[in-house]
Image (tube, rainbow, N blue to C red; front, side, top):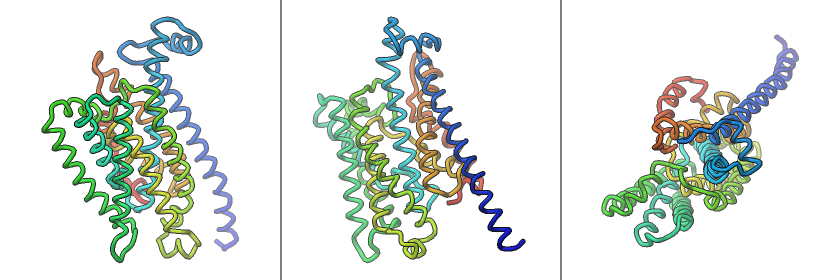
Length: 346
């Protein structure tokens, strides 16, 4: 095959690849819409789809109260948190070039947990909104501390030093938080559902609190996407191509802090979502970070909404937190995926 023939074959394949990606994106969007409708219809009191649609346009009694006042806020919150965690995971995997990377590697989740524990221990009468703010503040302070610690020494702010600093500091903070929880029964009871990653009972105030931070994190993620594509080729080649490693790294760290910090502050720890969803997106799209982030914005909320729906219906009238369901489902799925060379490669 001549050079011209090979080039023509590559150029002809680009539109087909783009078309497949767009079709996959449309299918993921359709799946998310279906899951949202199921989230509005299913629960301890299942509702016919017709009643759900009627409840959205007028007050039809109990169905309107269930759908509008209870299920819509928790569904919207699950969508926002799912987007935040999935995108944060994709950014961490792209920055560290490690398919096992998780948004919690920067210690953000542990910082949020310590902030939550602190306010519950010393201000037990604080509102749910105050607890969210305390958790987010702990996440931000932890990320800043990790960035400062990782900047020390001769190696600079490399991904390796940042991750090591995040893991070390996160372990310390998680140990402190766990000690406080164990030694105080009141804190234990309050933290039990938060540590399991539950969206039950949370409303529009929580959504309004985290939405601006998630939006800002997504803007930073969009900026960092092209730089991560260059970093994936190797840092020396990224520099040769004109990419700014420092700006990309700062943008990623800022985005992960905003996204993971706000999501964890809102509903607690959700296992495997931030690690698994980027794997699925990369398996479908290939290594282009822009497409991975786009798919993560749809696959992440789909997984969390589905987990929330499953948790509501399997033990009626009780519920299993969505974070527990994602762990039970995510662990075997992730094991199966990482065994596939195409899915696990970066």
